[in-house]
Length: 160
Length: 146
Image (tube, rainbow over all chains, first blue to last red; front, side):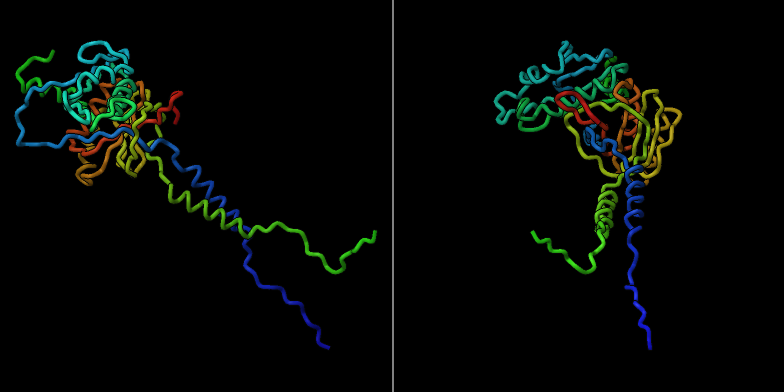
């Protein structure tokens, strides 16, 4: 008599697949950066050789002091009052309102970087509806110490 | 009441784990897509801002930590410390010569003296860097968070 052997079903064992993939997940989680990947951008002005002359123009001068406070056009002003002050600088008759005067942001050498960023952030939001609702963003300049010295030199005036 | 008993072989109880691998593979795909290797591991307390724009991946990084140590990275390799701010200029020139469109990220601690950041930005401007990002955290109504 022929004995019939019970055949086992052929299968690929996948039980350990989850373990392997969990290990891979743990690797990605550990090595992944959860750091900030956003920030304030500013486009560096393009060089224009045709405009070699420097023309004096009216601007709003924001200074960051070493203690982290601010002066706007040489008057002490808290960050929360920037919008009220800049409202007076809106071009007369412009619709939608526009401030064409450039805003120069000049932090003191000893000023904390965080205070400069707070002012820069506030100025970048000035066109939004909850601030001045301007037709376009403010023209903010962040000149470096070397650029300021070069400008004063070109104008033939000693730096104040 | 009459109890009806089922006769015959009952199947063994088990938890199906075959779909576990599928779920985990989906998670892996998510991590691979969003994976962003941190090139600069210096710990800094970033300033918080409301305006924040997405920084392109693999941008070059210049970091300044609380103790004033400056580190530079071309965006793909881990950042290395440089002895002085002046070195940032030559580093940036090298990077820009290889990829003129590459954005630079300044990652500085919020209590850093502005003079250091000013020199870094000036070095980047002189190296003809086109776009500079100042890395920041999200500012919220209550304060800031990472």
